[in-house]
Image (cartoon, rainbow, N blue to C red; front, side, top):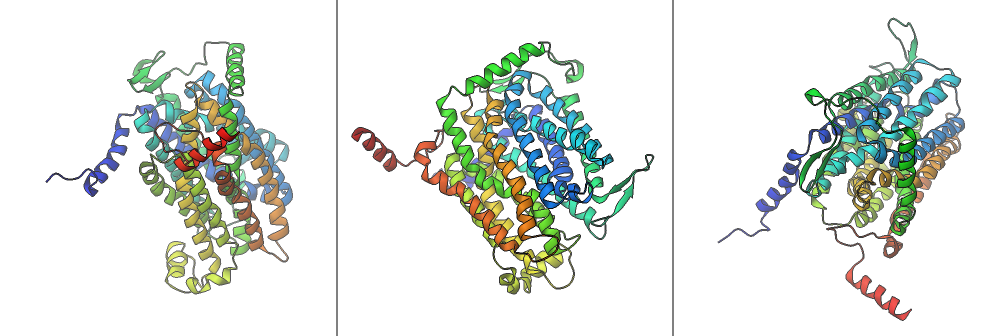
Length: 516
């Protein structure tokens, strides 16, 4: 009797085949992955984790002022991301990469070496936002350009997983350097030869400089121009220099021609009706995405104030999340290929939004678990914290586990969704403009972060951090509720995917149209 096609062994083989197809991808895809790991490591160490602490400790800003600076920085990053998408389509992937890495490298050096506000901010902090913004749309556009349709779901899943691998390594470094066996929360280190004394947070930024260099070298020395994967196979347009190394020269076209082409691509997007529905969908997603902004901007100060100086909270808030994403995202990407991105966003964002309410509960509720085997495993064995277990560690643990599960279901599908519906040659433009709603979202969260910390979790005085996280959780619920209620109006059909609207709902919709 023949083995049925649905047998477990057959399913497992099909599952592995989805990953084995990646072996035929060009070297450019793997170069992008390697560069992306290093850039995300640099970003996590030198910006995401340390920025609010650096602004207050080294530059002397209050919570409110630091929140305002972060809001401005985040808004600049998002705005530039929106604007450079069409530039990437016009300029090319490799050249945009090189420009972004170069700007990040210089700006991070300035931030590490100077505590003068008039130098560190205009020549360090804000230019870094521009450099990072240049690379956001080009990373995702490269994943589409260097894969065929059969490889794409797994490619984007790996893209998102490797991003989190960089984050996980960065969180380990962040906690180790701040811990008692490192420099401590407020330690110092003298830079050899220059004799400059660097604080703990400036050393972290200096490490981000070190991590930026390998990505720049990989793109410069090994990425070829004009590589594209189609259903017919690999195509390489343009010239290659000897040894496979591409020239570093800027485009032969004039700046005016590039700007004209950029403007033409950008203007054309706003004439497509489907693009407006896509943009509204991305606006709803901001609610759930705000959780991760709060983890970057609010959580570090919250963790130090509630758990104490040197507390290894990044192992929970960052590393646990990243490791779970590295494991879960490729699996979820392979197993949910046939399910629409829209449906995955609705379900996954509900799980993520619900997770926040774990740390909105009184920590005392978790004391029985903290005094049992779970507290011993998480706090004593894994985190290496001696003494009685603070139950807040356990509530954070559950928060991050559930957040990560939801994130694995929905977050990587956003990148694929934007790239899948983009017309050929406009992938970076769509990826960039998908960030447009985040412009206001990040600006709002940056300012909100400072206000929430000042009101509910100040350095001294009475605190109510549980209510702070309750408010954040309520704002995150906008995504699952909104995408569910407006699914009939916002769903854009993806090729080869199940529609989010059921046949019954579609029939009702058609009946309503006939009545009209």
